[in-house]
Image 1 (spheres, rainbow, N blue to C red):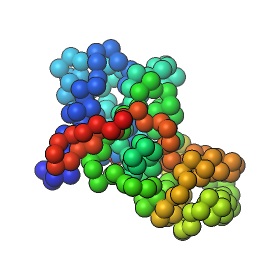
Image 2 (cartoon, rainbow, N blue to C red):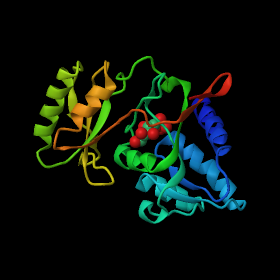
Image 3 (cartoon, rainbow, N blue to C red):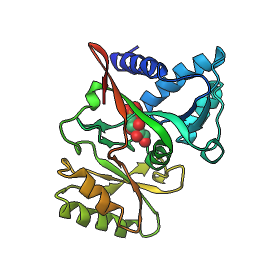
Image 4 (cartoon, rainbow, N blue to C red):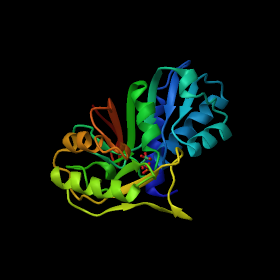
Length: 230
Ligand code: 5RP
């Protein structure tokens, strides 16, 4: 097992400590969330009773294979806790998410949760957001026009960098909702809240990967063990 895998397992085990019997849980997407789902599945097979909502088809498939009961968000209603990974985390717990292309459902599920806890290894901690290209979910109709507007809006918000469609195996990458992802290599985002507000005003933008004032806590795994940021 690589050191990275070991850190993911450690932080996943720590997050499992937040789960109580009877909880309704949101399950994130990505390799760190997958480590949590694997750990949760082991507990469910030992008799832990939880009801879960998946943020992607990949997470749903993994959870079902692990024996975890999956409900729709409509039937589950308000969730107690969502556990998810992130691509970048700053000191105020603002996040960039969407590296796995699931940001829209991740944001919907996180917003439907009383508590949203991010799990990551310390490589995800940053002084300022933006080195990781910001994923933005866009409507396929007129996508090139939307990308140009994202570039313009980005420059107005002090962010300059290439905005390009994410490629999949067979043409543009498609999200579970059938949308495209624009990856925006801004390099640095001076005011993430301003940029987020401006992006949401572009009609072709479905949702962006800036998660501001959403995370209640982050569990961060490093050489010294797991620490909690709140
Ligand atoms: C998926 C995400 C992931 O949580 C993010 O990309 C982190 O993934 P990983 O744990 O594999 O580094 O936002 O849309």
